[in-house]
Length: 175
Image (cartoon, rainbow, N blue to C red):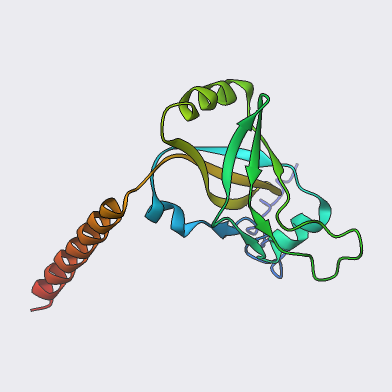
């Protein structure tokens, strides 16, 4: 009996090359860059978010903003307040409210930990980024403590000193 030739397999091409990088999960939908400037961020965790259809389409189009958003534990549930998701361009009269309160989905054990940690003085929940994971929108939340003005200045001073040191090392390597 003759032996069959080995079948060569080619690497599978990208599922849909025309798909947006945000929708494909290759890039974050939105990032809260002000969070690291205004807060000391500690523990980070992932939560699902309950959205309507037009909200998902707006997030895919890059119309989400987390700058003034924060998380709140109320009646044993986790909520996201002040997250702005702009109107969907092709929506109709049933389009969503941009600043509505949205429910976050976490495991019960994580929720119990969060309740304990957010009750400490000065601790709050701040969303740091929104991204796609396996076709679902996720929100990364961080436990945060607010910075004072002098903390912000100190952080900026430290960042400037680190940048100058890296530049000096790079200059010395070139010569």
